[in-house]
Length: 457
Image 1: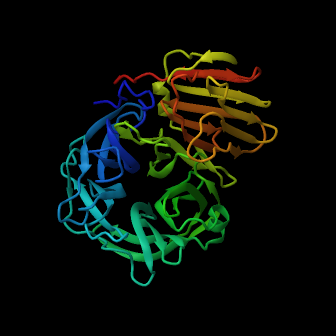
Image 2: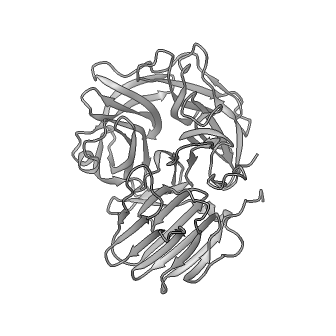
Image 3: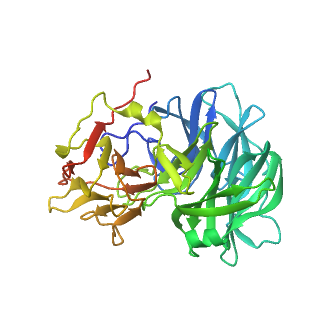
């Protein structure tokens, strides 16, 4: 079954990965197996609330057309994951796809265990059935570090050997990423603290607000640099950040610079898939509204290709496979005013200050993006779409010069790509009298395509 939104809810994205109903949060274990991308996610199959955590599962042959599969991981009564199968990754372990995840038992005190589950039939292209190991491979954090948060394993390879990161927080409020040797997936050995919040580059980039670093991810850039991604936890999900640097042969990570991974308010817990020629990333976009009567909550972003610029800044762009979702002909090719579809892919180029209006209310307020090439800023204004907190403009600094903005909109999910320098992910819920209309300052270049359901061909 392909992914599709309930026709009665215009806020529900139709082209991004999410279950047909009920809750989803973190993407888990993006994995390529025998020509298909598999993507798992935190999922409550019974209600649109964060509880009863399983691993949902979808897969795709082209990153555009996704198919649902049965729930992959289910809590085991009496097992180490009895109270939830929480975030983790998926790896190829000797020809057997293996999920490495956080298990929480019924005596949960804030500290997870690290559990494994293996694909029951590696020859099944859908990887439908999974068999959990009866005991965790790591029963808790290492002794002597006073760790009070321990979760979200991420396995990677370096110099032909397999290692793992685990997100952590310490009793004194210091966040960290722990390192394990797990060349044998059933035999994990603590190898030290990869990085913590006292690191000068980390402190300069993230400040001191976070008390834990969740969902650590690590990928190799094409120029040899390494990028460490962390989700910043301050008692609640806060924001996401990255550090670029060097990973030495002794597994010391030396951070060079960093920044926000996404400048929007509705992006968290990204997961990375390292492929031979690129790294792909998906993030979780939570609901910014009260659920009300909605029977679904949460969506994953479009897949993003991530790398590093020569100055150490993040390089990020939509996966090129997303072009498959474009209609055969663009609906707009020149500045001016035109109606917007519910889902679209829009590119605007600007050499001078340009205002792009995407939505306006009956009262005249609007959702606008201002591109200022001279100042080197792109500003998202959400006048007229208040949330529980005051909504300040989102200002993204970029190098001065000609600017390109790409906007992917799918129902309530708005993803803005500022060149290949920055992203802004926001949720925008239209009201009955809102007007979905594009208006672009004359002089800019504009091309937009409606998104259409992909064909299997």
